[in-house]
Image 1 (cartoon, rainbow, N blue to C red):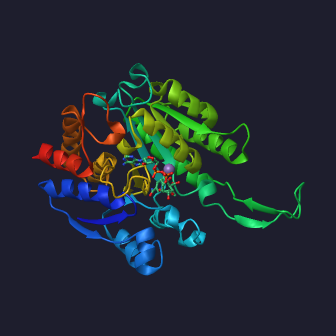
Image 2: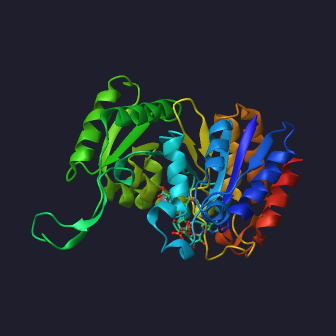
Length: 356
Ligand code: NAD
Ligand code: IPM
Ligand code: MN
């Protein structure tokens, strides 16, 4: 089994190092090959997603990805910006289903910015469509407005669109996931305003006919954002489009104590996947050795489970993380009084030790 390791930028290399150490501690040995991506890809080969990196990702059984991006690339052409690497990987590998589980470990109830009674026992799954929507719709750009009230002025524009088959396949993933959990699915849309999301709602409703054992409800995205902080435990599985899913999953991250706790899996139709923390390259703390590596370590556990067929090893990693939290070790993002503050490396050390 071969894993492509793509550390990327900012805290990416720091957190990936810890996940790789964890993988190397398991009985099962994996072949791993590292390649530059994002700003690092641009520095090494003049492109955020160098050809060799894409090839490695295509050939590997799974991809473990850190994060990309840095403010210093903001002035580059869009096609050369670090973020294009992750967007390109998702599109090229057809990773249309993004699973972002927001689980609150009981020890972190006090680390969340919400009251413990609102978040304790939280276990929700956000399923974000990842290769469509306004992220990839054409046309897009900046042009002279061809008509309307602002005719002749410069305007920026993007295209929101979803094909029927794109909605159907993510809906199937969501209903099947709900079936394995509490059998409740909330489809989040903006059908009251957007054609694309009225269509989304209609198609999800149609797919529901094949999953009558699952309860389906629909919610507008603005209300969903509010309900996520008001009564998040009312959700079981949420399915939504690319853009809404991006925003809602960051909000859900805070329920778990920190965005440094939220792993993710991005899967194609055959469960080949890319695994990455839901957060970014955190340029504000990069190089300081304080980033929380747990989202990345938990992403590696998801990789073991979904793409490498090693559920037992995945359990071991997840249990090791629980053990370390129970020992009271905390990176600064999840620190609270009475716990022990540690850095990225020490957190990795502790997980490795807990595995032993
Ligand atoms: P971010 O997620 O990088 O950071 C937001 C905040 O969360 C920061 O204060 C940061 O310090 C903190 N944070 C994030 N991860 C953390 C961790 N593991 N431990 C402790 N604290 C953590 O989002 P941003 O600042 O909006 O974006 C920074 C860069 O990352 C941008 O270039 C953006 O495009 C990129 N980005 C990349 C990905 C990805 O690679 N998939 C995801 C999101 C953002
Ligand atoms: C994420 C990130 C990416 C996204 C960016 C970096 C392209 O925010 O993975 O959530 O918007 O999908
Ligand atoms: Mn995001």
